Amino acid sequence: MEFIHIQNLIEISSYALFAFLVGIFLFPKFITFVTNYKFTQKIREEGLFGGTAKLFKALHLHKSGTPTMGGVVIIVSIFITIILSRILSYFGVIDYSLLNRGETYLPIFTLGVVGFLGLIDDYLNISESSKQKGLSAKVKFWTLFLFAVFGAFWFVFKLDYSTIHIPGIGDFDIGLWYFPLFVFILVGVSNSVNLTDGLDGLAGGLLSISYGIFAVISYFYGLPILSVFCAIVVAAITAFLWFNIPPAKIYMGDTGSLALGATLGVIALMTNAIFILAIVGAIFVLETISVILQLFWKKYFKRKLFLIAPIHHHFEAKGWSETQIVMRFWILGAWFGGVGMLVGLLGMGDSGFL
Image (cartoon, rainbow, N blue to C red; front, side, top):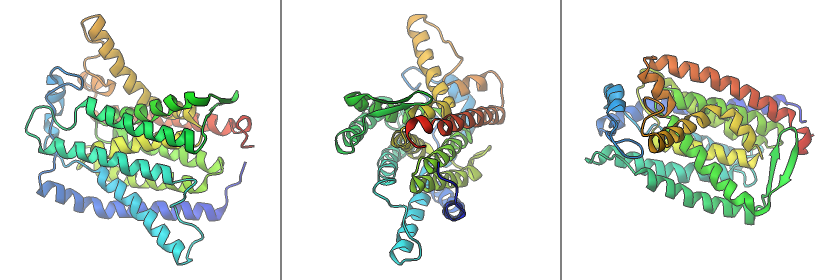
């Protein structure tokens, strides 16, 4: 196991602080911009998979008109920080930039491409006059699926990825089965985060915990530049949270939730830590399972299991305040994150890192 060096901590802290300050500076200006151009939240009237969303609309009608697309500033803050590191390394001020082929090309590419998909969805959501806002669930799914297939092809046939690590047991070569696994992880994590992004501060807080855990895991797995990347993502998200905590002044939209979810999935695959991700992102998993169970109950039992899904809306309908739900989910997310980090670090010996 590598020891933590003071120089590494200084670099991580400096980049993270810069990304945070960029976000804090840009968000007020962006909020003013999207407000002036009426790029604001529209409350959907249709369910995620058909039907009406009367209960959802009743619970969230007061949020109509809140600026959205905050994910744009999160991504821009990250990219500005990366560009600065490239400039500083070019002039010899620092030894390396955050633009690194072996560690950050893939997550940066994922963040940009999926972020663009989310931006299209957000734009359609705020500009369309029809009841079905934004891209349909099927269009988003299949677009993400095609991108995931491309990513799986790259990982399997270009980078020769074929091994998964089970903490406490060891590594297993699954051959071409890695291809569908990659697709499942990228599409699944992206959609899970997107489903979780339904209350002020909920997805942002859980994402900051998850990326923070993977910053630690990446560092001790011998990927220091990827660790810094995770740290600046945390910083950019926390800058967003400064304006997103209840009552939110801006939402991240699909620009942020889809992109940050997909990028988290890619990082988990790069660090061979998909089982760790399942622990760290347990709340995201729970949110997705609640939707699947709701659909199953409605189809086979002709009634709802939850008042409304995902499950955070169920608690909202039960009378929990938004702040109660968010803070309690953050607490659970922090606990699962801590457990996931411990499992990940303790499992380094059987994965060849020790």
